[in-house]
Every structure is written in structure tokens, then in C-alpha cells.
Length: 164
Image (cartoon, rainbow, N blue to C red; front, side, top):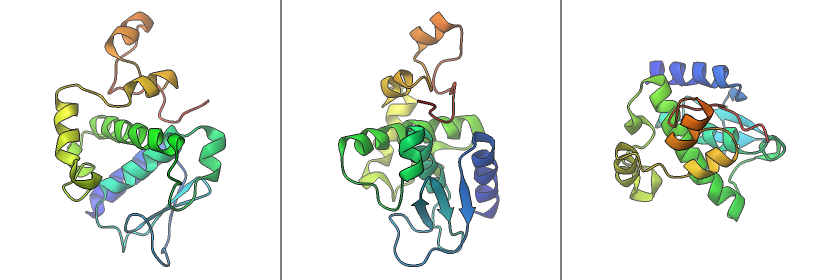
């Protein structure tokens, strides 16, 4: 688990996602992880699933820069964060592919309200949820748009951090 955490943290540094390794007091949405004003707090002693780091990082990465700076604790249940959930799922899958780690590291059986296998099946069949939103934010493109732009299609990411 320690090497997986180390590799994921190196990826966060590569992408520019802010993080801190420190103890988390009290409850958090996912064990060992908390958002604090656009920074991902990671408590390696409480962390159960290293892949959850990538998912939470995906929330920060796919939010607009202004929204990213304000993200804390449990995100409000509203349209922008529901769309952000889908984008974080797509982003974290692309991160797995980029890093060469099995998607099951992020989409483990205990996550996604029992829907992890469905997500894995969809990704395996190239049914990419949230790809239109990633395309709208210029983070990644489907095969047709990527061919027009002469870039690699999703799951390759054009930008790991949303810029607009």
C-alpha cells in the first residue's frame, strides 16, 4: 500500500494538485482524506484505499479554478458537484491508465455505492461517462474531436487541471 500511495502522490505533484500529508481529526467523507480550501489532505494512517486519493484529486482537478479554491470537507449535494462526481470518475480512470495501474485500485468493491463493477464494465467497453463534460472543459476529447484536433483521444488527458 505504501508504494501505491507514493506513486499516486508523485502523480499529484506532476499534475499540480495541491496536497498535504497530515493527520485528520474527526470524521471525513472517505477515511484518511479531506478537502481543505482546494488542498487534498491525506492521512496515510487512516487511509484504507489508496485509489480514493485519485478520486478525491479528480474532484479538485475537474473543478474550475475559482471553485477548486473553495472546496472543503463534504461537497454540497448540488448540480455542479453531481456533475463533478462524474468528471472525477472519468478523470481518475484516465489517471489509472496514465499511471499504468489497474482501474480496480480506484474502483474497488467498497466504493461507488456498489456500482464499481458497472463503472469498470463501462470503461472496458469504452462507454466513457462524463467525457462530453471533459471535452467541454478542454480536458479530454472523444475519438472524433481528437482526430480533428490531431491529439490523442480519451483516456488520454489534454489537461490534468481544468483551466476555465
